Length: 190
Ligand code: HEM
Image 1 (cartoon, rainbow, N blue to C red):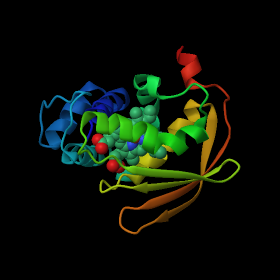
Image 2 (image 1 turned 60 degrees about the vertical axis):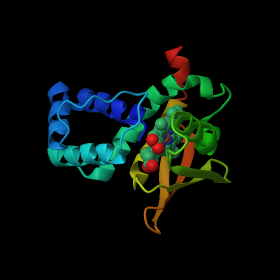
Image 3 (image 1 turned 90 degrees about the vertical axis):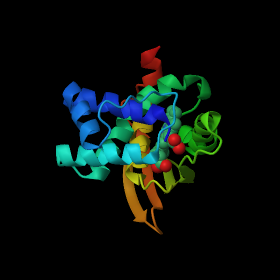
């Protein structure tokens, strides 16, 4: 697992729950004081154990935490990898290109043996997308949260119309994109 995700999880936890909460999650997860830096790779089990500890501490379920974190993490990722993202993309174009143009590039650049998730996004009709998630990590809820985050980033709104599960950790989300605030996050940040 790429350190950019875990280091952002740390920022998310600190923003939501305060500094000591991160230390206690690391302790509960059996890695007290462990440093996570965005340019390193870590065992998948580190993220799993930290999320399991967050479930225990907050009493929220795993999917709710992953989904909320997925939406939260998009703006910092967009900022960090801005040079990968053409200016004329909208939420739909972004999502349809995330697998090849973002994940493959970001993750394989660091480690060619890494296994990023497969996010296969196709347009079913105007404004309606099918988002297929496949990964051994079973973090479909994180993918759905990222979809919400991307829509919001582009000043749009994503609504979940349908979800189908399986086989295994395979998830398919049908989402509708519609006009939201109209304010694009990257324009705001400039
Ligand atoms: C600028 C945008 C994005 C960047 C830079 C980015 C980058 C990354 C990176 C580096 C990882 C770690 C993967 C690994 O170590 O194998 C990751 C994981 C993940 N990303 Fe993204 N991502 C972005 C947007 C998205 C979007 C839009 C989605 C969903 C539609 C998504 C879904 C996921 C999921 C579910 C994981 C967890 C790993 C797994 O389930 O296997 N990401 N992302």
